[in-house]
Amino acid sequence: MRLVAGFWRRLDATSAWIGLGILAPLGMLVVSGTMLLNLRDDAWEKAQQTSRNLLQVIERDIARNIEVIDLALRGAVENLSAPGFTDVSPELRQLILFDRAVTTRDMGVILVIDEAGNTLYDANAVPARQLNNADRSYFRIHRDHPEIGLDISEPVISRFLGVPVVVLSRRIAKPDGSFGGVVQASLKLTYFSSLFENLALGTKGAINLYRADGTRLVRYPPWDGTLGTSVADSPVFQHLVRVGHGSFVGPTIQNTGSRLHTFMRIGDLPLILDVTLAPEEIEAEWRGRAAVLGGVLLILCGLTAGLSLLFGRELRRRARMQEELVRLSRTDALTGLPNRRRFEEALAGIGGAGIGGGGIGEAGAVGSLSPFPLSLLVIDADHFKALNDRYGHAVGDEVLKGLARCLEASVARAGDLVCRVGGEEFVVLLPGSDGLGAARVAARIHAAVGRLDLAVSGIAAGTLTVSIGVASSDDVEPGMWSLSDLYRAADAALYAAKADGRNQTRHADPSGGSAASDDAAFFERRALARPMLSDPDGAPASGSVACDRSREDGPFSDCSG
Image 1 (cartoon, rainbow, N blue to C red):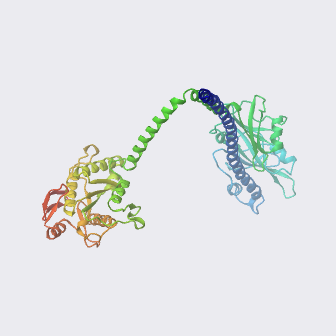
Image 2 (cartoon, rainbow, N blue to C red; image 1 turned 180 degrees about the vertical axis):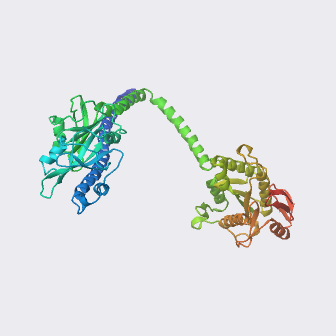
Image 3 (cartoon, helix red, strand yellow; image 1 turned 135 degrees about the vertical axis):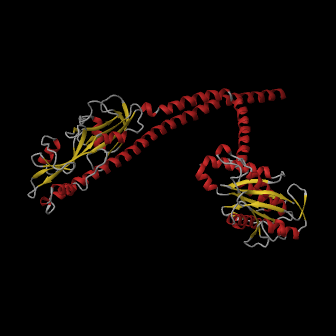
């Protein structure tokens, strides 16, 4: 019985694996086939939506331009009957008639012609250039049909310009209502071609602009012999006129193949826009995706185990990338120093405070200073904006890199932190260093910056200087200041140094006031208060320190305890 039960268990397991081996690929094929069909539908929907968006943009542009031209025509008709119009000079008549005339790039000629077709007034010449347009279709339409408002002609060759144009015209009525002539404005067909030329229609797509009577005004890309022809008998055009707007798949008007037609009327004008796209071009991207997906399916069915290994390798790669991103998020890209975020984290590690948009300790997040010494230097490059404006940003970047090297070279211990917190502003955080140790670091910074030579960029040694503000926790009783106070005090001392002439170090007022002391006052105070202090390197130092500083000649030349 046990042998039989074991046999059936092994048989069931084998059948299950075989079934899974068959059903899994079949299921993948079904799901993938459904996805491919959905992708095909999406491609068609995207093509239709793109065509509708193109039509809306083109329709608004054409309608607006025709409206502007029509306003000029209406104004000319009204001004012809203005009181005293015939009593003024010809130049003033031209100004009155065509004061609303447009002068866009593709505008042609604006004329007023009398009932015999002769030119009365010309927007571009005084006296008017003589021409007879009685043979033009738009002239005959207004003469024979008084009810016609704005007429848009078929494409014609302008007799003044010699280029293809469409003519927009309105009837002039005499006081008794009889025909008095026509006001006309021509619009070059280059207006439409420039409007269409940057549109992505594929190699077989096209845009057609028709009059409601079936006359083709414009086709893009152009075909020889297509302008001005009538397509009124085409079933496709009849559908366009009957429906007014929408999309459908059908033959071209020339019956040269199947196309996706997306069409609409232009406002209330007798104009119809039709955008056509070839189905094979609509599906071209989808076909490529289908081929890729089919190939991927074949690979997936045969390499499941291999994909598991690749997945593990990908996870390790992503982990390394994540570590690199974390490192980069804490590093200033230009100088390679820790950035503001790393400075905030260091402060948070010391006392739970951080720098917000306006300083340390936003929203009350402040921490008390620890009992052990802590000093903070805020350093700002002097006249950096003027240097940037004079030499350019490339030199400014080199200066910032050089300053970063000077700051790094001026700190001695592994726990000291040099950061760039923005623009030309840097900070040096010295855990375990008292005020005297911070003063020694500031002196080394001044000396290193004074030696900075960027000859390639035209910056000689001694040209660059910095201003430094220093605040130390050992100047106050523990618990009296917070980390936010420490940063504000150092920042205030920096501004005091800049206000007092730059190229110097200022030390924060231990009383918490706004005043800041210079080096002599600081070292005198420290000598009286604490006869023995340690420098940042851990070496003992006497309480009396003499520093020689010159504001004109350079930074600290010597600082010894």
